[in-house]
Image (tube, rainbow, N blue to C red; front, side, top):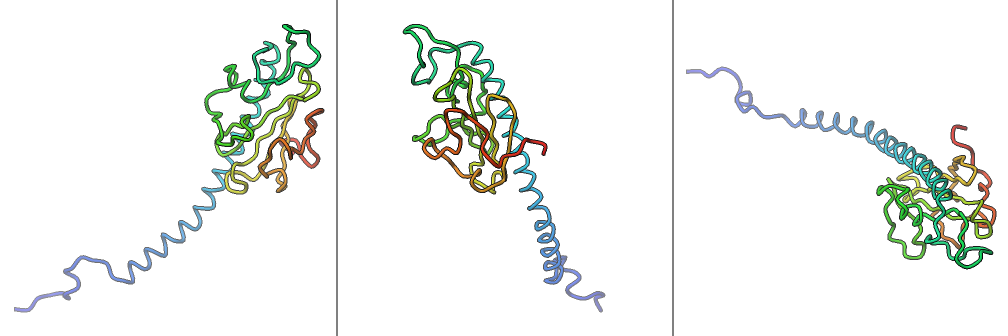
Length: 196
């Protein structure tokens, strides 16, 4: 007797053309979705950096109000022995006092141990070398520039957060090449306030 249908219809597999079309569609979807996913991740990291600096601003105020003679300050400027005036602190001071949460983790950099890492950004805070009782500054920059974030952020004792997208601001810095004078703690030139 005669069988109906072709031999290929009884196999139940996909043809090469069908597989090629399905692969092409998947490639187009991935090409459209991946850049959006990476941009969303950067935006989330930047938002976390701004929130981290807001937490640091609040922590500096509390640290100053409490007064901490056991801090990492190397010198208590012009103070009689046994007397410690209120001053601002370093990242280790703020975290060690319980004013910053555990999401600020240590970096593996042994040269500048006062750095902390949080969600793709490195944070650093320092009191003025001449007026730790009145001035401080802090910054956050991407741990991998242009990958974990496109903006660097800076704040100081005034409590306003500024940003830059300039390559120099995104660079990893250490205490010897810090763009901000440690005596007066100003906002670096070229930074704009958040929201501008």
